[in-house]
Image (cartoon, rainbow, N blue to C red; front, side, top):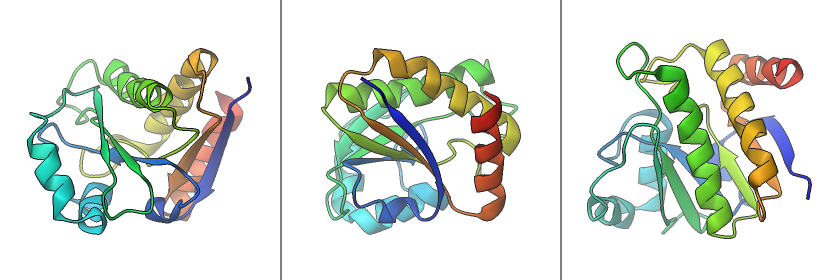
Length: 170
């Protein structure tokens, strides 16, 4: 089976043809800044209530929840490393992407949309994060049985360009 890896500029929350979106989560699974805050706001308070029952997520790990008020049935909360703080950074970022993909496959998700994990308030440099993300996804693709599309959704033109270039190089 072939898996399509796409890169688009746009709003993660508007990827209505995807069964799951990935939240760039914190370890406590609490509403935060950036994409995390937007996902929690759009999903409604039931998402935060549900996340409280999970006991958090490890850096480099991921958990899945219902999407509640989101158009996507599922949210996969992947916790990437805080740049300069969580080590080994590259291995943890790789793990966040791959664990999210493994959860998607296990839960029979065909299309999944990712943000640029760890590049916001966690401070990961965009070019390095893009290289790691694309390499991590491509390494996991041969093991996927159900996932058919992995979509990187970048909010601004600069991030989109960096990820497009990484897709050509990695």
